[in-house]
Image 1 (cartoon, rainbow, N blue to C red):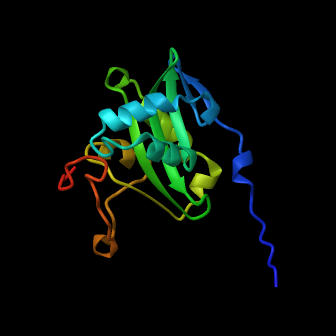
Image 2: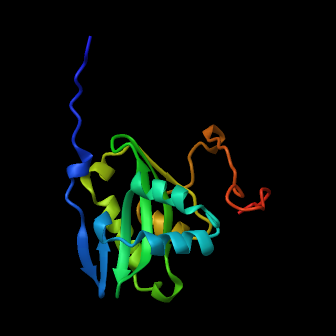
Length: 166
């Protein structure tokens, strides 16, 4: 027996392209500069330093991404890892240091969290070291039942430091 299930074609969603304070904020991957994002994540971030390019590219291609671009440089990024129906995990959010303090991260999150399909997700999770204030603006809070959460953690998987706590 073959069962046909209606599924909205998520890949036909119109991409977001917004001008904000001289920056282009977009979900259109054809406008993004993955090499810039890869460089920042693999060399500067505390959470995915040393990630191989092929692993990064697979994560980029299989996520709903948003980015901030100015003068041909990708200076801000974030992605939702999602099934587009019930759950998402917000990951790899950053704004390069010289571009912080003008609301880029807030604007990127505002655009993401105002999408209809995102508003209808049952749950969205994230992990952050220092951006709690930003994420609380969008409804994030500490887990109500942290004892129910479990994880497999391999923080040093891309580096020689397999025992890293970052």
